Length: 262
Length: 263
Image 1 (cartoon, helix red, strand yellow):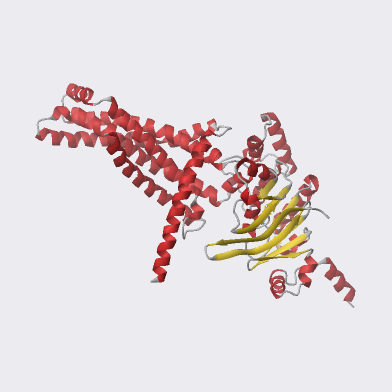
Image 2 (cartoon, each protein chain N blue to C red):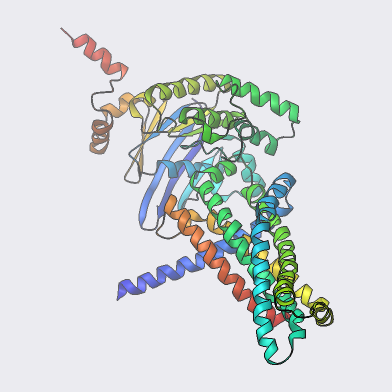
């Protein structure tokens, strides 16, 4: 019995300490962005890795998501004789919800896991200690460029996602199922307002911070993971945690933001 | 008598329920070579990390150049760390950067030197350490011994006053290990740094030492010379000597003694 209580206490302490670590990490990372000398070259390289290299994944995910929306939307709306509203339905779902959420999830899978593993391995092979010993702030040198690159990349990828998705819906709805092309776009023009677009952009900024924060911090604290220790197992557990935690956070924050912004 | 440069005052450190250091006291003198020895898991690397301020003691003080490093932060800590050069066990080279970029990193980040000046300094140091022509390789393309040399080059770039070596010869064959010792002697003569060597490569490393600290069961024991260790009456030390040195190591005193007693 006592052992159970002890274990519960240990877990609680670990959880609280972890939360504290994550909070301090975020503050130091944001401070790192504003510290000189700036590493513009590293930001550009990271933007290419996180953003530009995710383009193909985002393009295909968006195209097929849009096509599915077109297909499902068409058959649902036809029951009410409202095929004309297909354009609005596709555009609103993409701009407000699916664009930001799916983009963030795809970036987590493609770049977030990679960032976490990279930093975890750097921690394990003492590369981060080496930076600190050379009096180089690892937050400025290593973490800040990833933060900036992700915060630049995810909103742009989200917009690309929504545009490609809308054309995916066009392909399925208009070209394959014969909805009137004019009504597809004019319905969209009437129902989509600036607020919908800004909602998507705000969400994508918040998701970007969540994704890069959780993924880099899990890698950075790989040596603190309970029971895993250093080494390959630690990195694999950190990466799994990073992907799971950031995906869940994105979905939870999506709900919260929708509730606030609507 | 040289002055103390690093001082441990009743330092304790534990991880979870494991007590790694238990009220440890010792002093490292300026300009000397100190070897920290002991079986693995006895807190040698933790001691090194405490000196660097990468870990904080649970109690007690670690004084580096008279200042409590655990209480320092930000710019003050960075300035103190500029006096350190560290050769890590696994060399800890940034594997996304070339040899040149790794060695140039401290100069680029911590000084205002121009590109040309950095380039010539880095290339000169690489040449001195026998790494000419390898500057555009990545760490993954180098052998263990070469990585150590690049690590040493990087550590020496800011001309540190204190060099810390974490297991400098672990994982190297005897020939490469000798090469590292040779480099150590050459660079120490040239730069005159205080060195702290953490190692379990006992017999060879003792020849370099002015002072030996043996860690075990959370305690640190100080010895002025390798001979003192062998003459110690402490049963733990005797056991350590028996396991690690056996008959391989004979200090000069004892060698002379045996020579004389031969028929």
